[in-house]
Image (cartoon, rainbow, N blue to C red; front, side, top):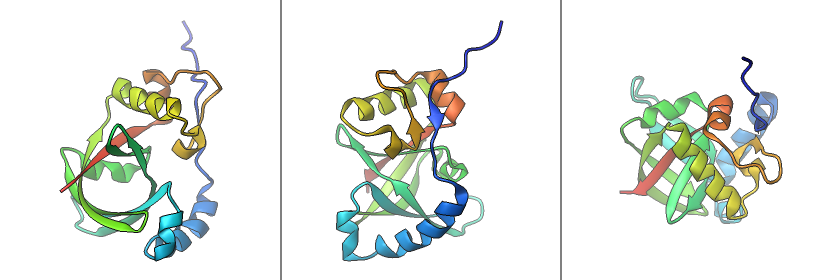
Length: 152
């Protein structure tokens, strides 16, 4: 029996594009202009194993009062069992604790909530056909997980 392929696809920008845009965004997100860049935030944290300071540009989502980052990036492993970070979103810096959620069904439910609330799939770096309900297998196929942030 052949497994059905996911109709949901990864839609991240090419690495070359990100290597040009992310340094610019890292600067802009530290300025008052960041208030106008609503979907993006700057996340700063220390690596659990290396102790190196990481600064990453992320798509910041809010759903039911929770702040979320949905990502396939490997750096997310730093947030297993909770990890402190600083987030700068819409001109405000906040101390947060991020906790990684990898359960595919829970990630799919959060993605569907964001999409049902009018968020575009492109903001999640995904391509989702109109009317499609994201499933756990879609989440697994695209390697997505959620980091949920709470203010300290």
